[in-house]
Image (cartoon, rainbow, N blue to C red; front, side):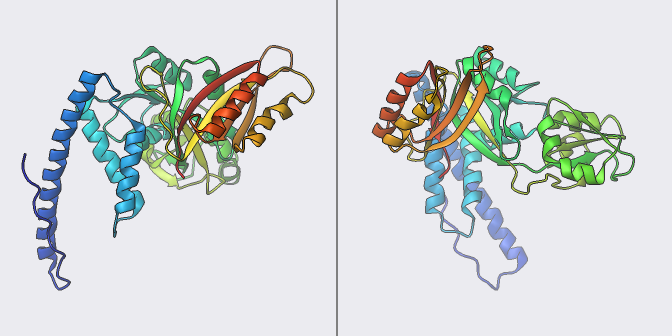
Length: 372
């Protein structure tokens, strides 16, 4: 194996632009040599995993490496930039071991695709689906190893279809991505004039309703399966516009007529990473974890209050509580709960054990690391 090249000494402040470019070219060659050395080791890791039958993708390992690198960073690179660089390095190396097939909401250019790339890196093999139902199906059937589904928006609340699919799906959650959402008005013409219809996912239309009411009050709001689908359709008709990402604008050759038109500047969407337990078991505790579960209780006075008692007595914090109709015609509900902590922690395990005894239906959807 080739030894790493010696580090280039710091630049002389009086160096010319030409001298600095020579130094950058030299550093690039050193980086390339080191990256290929890392890739060779990753190939060997892949062979060991194949012999042992262990998972190729370990999100907890990725998180540990990225945390270690950002913690040891001395600048001037920002920690977020170091994290992004190392995620791509690890994604490229993992692709040499075994490319990860990931189902996402399509077509190309969706925020779901963006969330998948943020989590798995750009080397993942993305499978585009027409709906979140299809993402669940692709993951369950094994045509994809992982799936990415939207579960909650900071403005519009939960993605109800995803919650309903979790109820009976054999998949579980092994990670999450919280994505800052910026909706842009995209069109073939670089003008607001003559727009007859705005096409987007229903949640995107809702998240931009104030801006649309002010600037395009007479344009039809047309719901489609995804924002990227709206952008794709807008590229076929000059009288249509879409609400989508900058990535979608590039993908479909559209002008960004108006940037970031969402009503809330801090609009975020949470995406869950799902897989079959046979593909990847529950990640071990990282110290910053979330446990998600869905339960139902007998329809009697005080039943919901009783759900909270085990959490209080075991000092477990609840970070989310959502209800969905059970569709039995009896006014019964399923409750989707996020807890702070991991089932391997004694106080969380005790709370879950007590909680389970109170429930007519009980299912842990997953336990996974979250950003601190």
